[in-house]
Length: 240
Image (cartoon, rainbow, N blue to C red; front, side, top):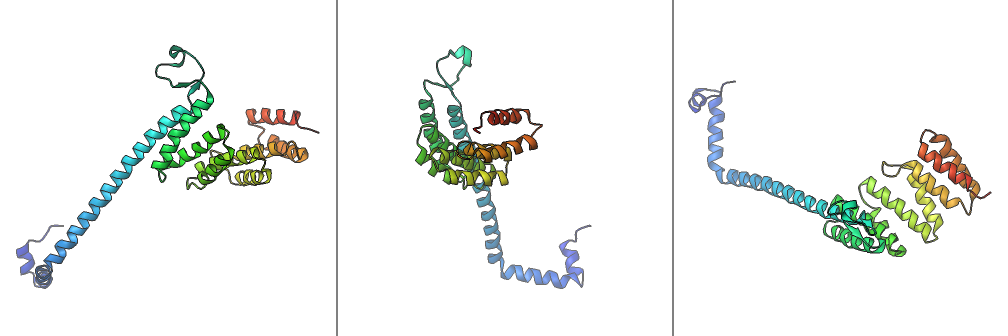
């Protein structure tokens, strides 16, 4: 639709009334209008700056997390760089590796607690502490990591937490978590993983309960060859 010129607006007997009112309003309130426009512009600029800042923080957090994961998965032992590949990170012992990774993950978790990378790092802090034999500290860390809003990270942390509770001899608490994980599976912790862990806690104290779980897994996941082999092996070694 063609736009009307200012002359046409003035000459139109219907539109001229609104035109005159608009001009009068603009003249009387131009300072307020300018201030409102400035506020909108500043708000848009602030939103853009905040998003850019968050993007930069996310990139930095991901970079630090990547370096920490490289240390966490590094080779332990002595081998030539030709065999491992150029620039491959290595450690003489597992303890050295987990100590180095713990330091790096802790840095990510402390600097970026609200970023997803920070949540993942906190989970790995607990894993490293567990690998270093610091069970009590690992339990506290994993309890915190289990509060992550990301369901995948939270379920991984809860699974690791249950494992550490088993190591600490707190079986009822661990079994409760395994049962909850089985009832609410995620991609990172499928129901079968949680059921298998639960059955393993019953092997020594309640073999009949463990057998029921193993038989159920064998029936429900018969198409999973790897799981079927694991269940078969567990059943074969289960105390009578």
